[in-house]
Image (cartoon, rainbow, N blue to C red; front, side, top):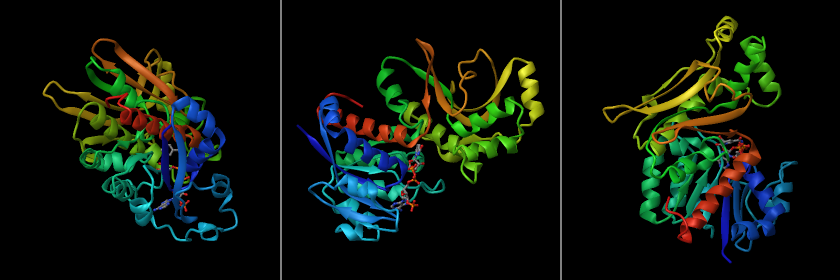
Length: 349
Ligand SMILES: NC(=O)c1ccc[n+]([C@@H]2O[C@H](COP(=O)([O-])OP(=O)(O)OC[C@H]3O[C@@H](n4cnc5c(N)ncnc54)[C@H](OP(=O)(O)O)[C@@H]3O)[C@@H](O)[C@H]2O)c1
């Protein structure tokens, strides 16, 4: 039976959860998915780097870090040698889950490029490389005969990208609209319950939904990247970030919320893209007061949803978690399953 050797780049919430999943369910997983997984390299800003072609002891790696300990004490180095590890380690697949800089997608863009250049497939949960350099990296993967997978970049493990690409064969996809940021959706829901914006944001921060600086969520930057990814991946666009109009929810007042409610509407931060009759695509993110019958009106709290507009089925809506370390680790696993199916000739996309 095939065993895939993995390198984990970044060892925070998502890749730790993937390691926990492999450690806890390795054998069961082998029976379920038809292949084994072994982690042969880990590199992380704080923990440094470790490569072991025989397989890293995951219980050791998962226990590391509390007291400033690094991989140096376990035969590795205290400094992360990302390029050296990615290019030279014996992994088949690089699982990239570091930080994404929304300006240029770094350092993740370089991580993905080094991996593809050295003939390794990549799965990433980072929006940056996909949104900002997706076309270039996909072309590099194609030239190298390897895979570049990124299901977790939109709605964590909830299948959106691959589902639309694989399940909608024979359907025309005219566009999509969705709630793709759980924090802003949670805040809007709490404003409906009577809280001011600031109070709702503080509550979201206390619950761990919102970052200390919530601008990426509230001002629509996060959704803008996700709309860019879906528009380019699913509608065949070649949009740049500036082509995606962006407006957040911070200007909405309690009065706006009340007026919508009395008109039978609910405010939602909607990311959308649509084909135009001239063959173009219009894409954007903005708050919209949708009617309560709208397919996205009932999506509450931190849940996300995307409604696809298809020619033969009309709207098809997928909803599920949009974040979470385990949910996003599952996205990496689903990418690995997809890579396996491609290798076995069981899938086309
Ligand atoms: N968690 C989610 O719900 C979720 C959902 C969808 C997508 N994502 C995306 O998935 C990625 C990982 O998320 P996460 O929740 O695991 O984040 P995280 O907990 O912050 O983990 C990222 C890890 O990567 C390390 N790192 C940062 N820059 C690095 C570099 N240049 N080289 C090596 N290691 C580096 C960080 O080290 P330090 O801690 O020392 O900085 C940290 O250990 C992010 O891009 C995130 O946007 C996450």
